[in-house]
Image (cartoon, rainbow, N blue to C red; front, side):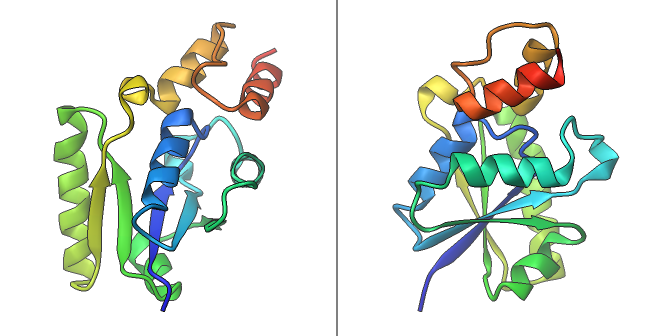
Amino acid sequence: MKRAIVYPGTFDPLTRGHEDLIRRALGLFDEVVVAVAESSAKQPCFPLDERVDMARQVLADVAGVRVLPFDGLLVDFVRGLGARMVLRGLRASSDFEYEFQLAGMNRRLDPRMETVFLTPAEQHMFVSASMVREIARLHGDVSAFVHPLVAERLVARFA
């Protein structure tokens, strides 16, 4: 039986830090499902279909990765896949409180659900999608933080 983990997020955009966590999770699990959330409340920079497309293109060469869109409760999405593990990244202690609350609520909604926390590699600890968007919006160079395809899309978005 395949051991799958679901990595949810808006991925607006997918960063090198996200890629790092996905690749490292594949050392622990057979499959990583990158679950791209609609998340209209966050007012994403890119529409859902474009975020899914970017993630699929960036991760196309990584065996064991599936990219799927989702909207609604994470526990329902995970359950629908027949999975029970969720991957979350922690960059700093400020992430921990929020992620700890989410993990607890998800477990309350579905007691079989477990959350696995991974920290990104040191060079990605300070990278967040919101910072990358802000740098791109101000016409800064984001090439160190995202895949070239994502960098191109950000330049086009903020041209």
